[in-house]
Length: 570
Image (tube, rainbow, N blue to C red; front, side, top):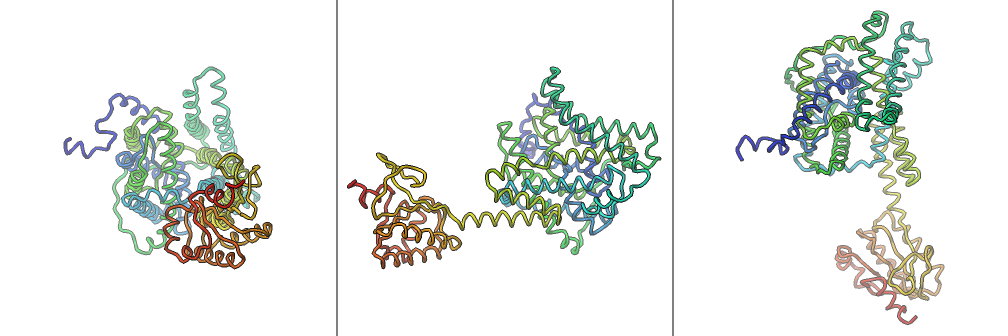
């Protein structure tokens, strides 16, 4: 292998020539379909429209060269866009040079965090946020995105971007020119919603293959953009008060080096960590889902390196934080992409558009872009997960709803903080209230089950108690209470067997409490036995005061304890 070939990414050593046609086609298709989305997400982030196009160029190439997913597409995404706006709008006027610099710094800091996590092999950190918290965060963010776009969709002028200000503006008298904007925006919403939910089934009923029908549906946002732009040009709607994208700086983005100020770094470090964490979870989850579907494997740490590099590159090309786009990746897969070369082709095609065709979108109405973003955001509100969590585990459902509500009411950082607190609270609650069962032996077997669920054999004076949780300082009261209740129901008890097959750890406090329980039971003439103690737990307890003082025995199995304590005489 030559030195030059070693510099190439794994997917290009050698590049499978049979994939070339599919990758070239997919790259060109993705460029056309995500161009309106890129413009819209830049405006959602409070940045000039060309910033969204910039993020689709060199940062996408950096990810394609360093990431591990073959079809994940990186660019501007809704979540990072709304987070960027939420973080920076209190610090500078959106669109101002200072705001653009702060956005670049936010991308740089989050990129460095992701790079560090990848190089230190900390990809497992993506598992720190539970799915209900992530679902609640995305759902709450989607609601904020909808509210943030209503001013463009309807032509109203709220005092702020928070939901309360937008609702107040909706209830106040609307500007005179708002009617035209609202009509254009409403038409775009109806068109896009009908295309998203009804066009695909209609085409399939007409005999169009499912893949082709899905592709036509994904063309509809581009059709809405074309239709809205033609309406503005033909009717001069921008001269009648309809807001449009406006001037787009053409040309290939230039490298812009800057030295961050210490004060700005201090203000943006925590938000950058949050953006990095959310980006980490979203990117790795999406990459894993795509890899499973294609029967491939990804490297979580390489994903972090690729995403981090993309954000660092974005920082120096006038952009905003980038992420793995769900819809962008879906388009890439549907267009037939086979390798990351499709992403590189898409980036090069975007550079070509920037060099000579970007001005064609200057009279694109913001109401149509807002409609596209709103329809996409509404699909991110995950009510199905909330219903499923409520039926399965209400603590998780409360974490999901609390995160979403916190995001809407208090902002992104406070919302996800609330979600993490609720998740940890649910985890502690479950651990502090362990499931404890009195068990007996199923007749003519060596299997033991809960006496409340199965017809089982029990021994007179012998209490078999299974603890289905590790023992730590937070759940010992529950264990002692349940033991006291069962002993009250068994006044003739002579032996208690604690079955520890589900106990993975016994902390110091729990060990001391077991010593106390052993002493108290011995004082009442009751022997304490242990059964099915796991190796690591056995090793620790054998070095504790419990072992020499234990009044009973340590049994290898529950059946061994049952036989030794009288089961063999039945």
